[in-house]
Amino acid sequence: MSDLIAHENFDIANSITNVDVGLSEKEAKRKLKKLSKKLGDLQDTLYAHGKYGVLICIQGMDTAGKDSMIREVFKEFNVRGIVVHSFKVPTELEKKHDYLWRHYIALPPKGKFGIFNRTHYENVLVTKVHPEYILGENLPNVTSVTDLNEEFWNKRYEQINNFEKHIADNGTIIFKFFLNLSKEEQKNRLLRRIEKKEKNWKFSPSDLKERKLWDDYQTCYETAIQKTSKPHAPWYIIPADNKPVARYLVAKTILERLETYSDIKEPELDPKVKAELSNYLNTLEGEK
Image (cartoon, rainbow, N blue to C red; front, side, top):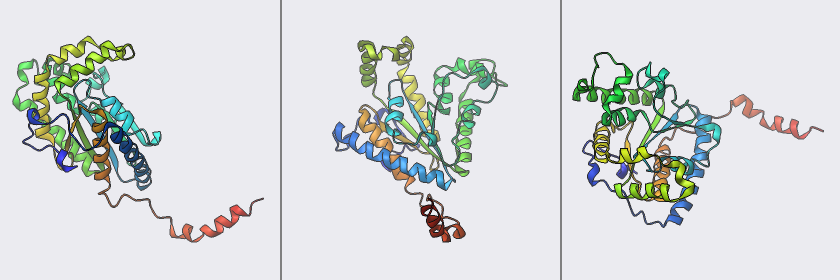
């Protein structure tokens, strides 16, 4: 799915939020189920192989469909092979460390999938829209928001790139998905949260406050994606107005890329053990 990869000239204003992949919603759901089963089988092989971990990073505006994306794409996985981390406001302990610390300790071990629902990119998105949050990190040489100049943010993009390059070089396969939602579709989804009783629990007045900052967030997303989409950690731009199609595209992207790793295969049995398999079989079948 190389056509979904963002490059340094990524233009969010001209990036589509809906795409026709030639599938009805019903067909997209059916194909997703097959893809999810294949991914689950591949995860078993990944675990047996034991040399790669897979990190799935999911970002998007409120209501972009992050939670349901995770639920539907990975529903066929063995639960022991996947861990989801939903990063909220940093705790007091987390703020006593650098901003990448809590993400580093949550990385998937080799053989497993890890999903970051909201990611380390919140540190160049939410904090850039609300720079006062940075003051809570108690950083040297930062005493007010006026210290958060272009040099500060460029250094943070560089730190993120270095972090991702380091873990990629050491066996983590990185996928970064931006669920690209239109402002109109976000409005529709927020309305459903208000109008449907069973969805009321999802609504927060803060959603409307953040919506007023839509343009600021779009600018921050565009810059972050431009500066951090790299061959070892590409950003995939997923049109997110149609949830079934978005889920299908994410699953297809993950499977197609992982299938390029020809070395991911189940290990061979020790030759001595393999030579004795028939004897082991006879022993078991001969039990009374």
